[in-house]
Image 1 (cartoon, rainbow, N blue to C red):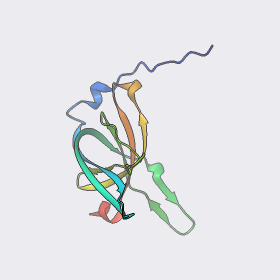
Image 2: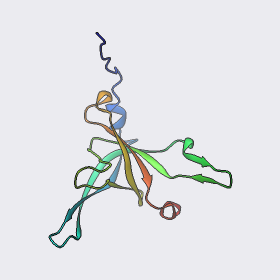
Image 3: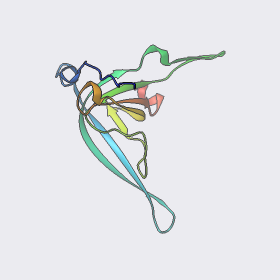
Image 4: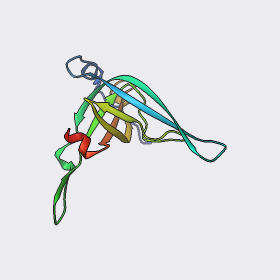
Length: 130
């Protein structure tokens, strides 16, 4: 029988370190359809402590006619960020005034209790340039 090997690295101390952590805003959007068939949105704001790092340089898309740098960050937090489920759209993360949408989430609980790693894409490249 194959055994599951748990990581022995606990990064909680690093991800809770005040030198790395920052306060970010998360906007969770709950959508519902009214009796008239119109979509209604409720925006629920949260304030979260997280570590945010830019995506790697592998996010440079090279095409025959141009190169395009896709803006994005990875967010490590003890908050259950979502990339869309049931009646919720993907969370919007606001870091340093820039808006990002959660594209993908991974459970990092094996590396420290309750941590989630979320890959986030910039909502508008224009807002990233400002």
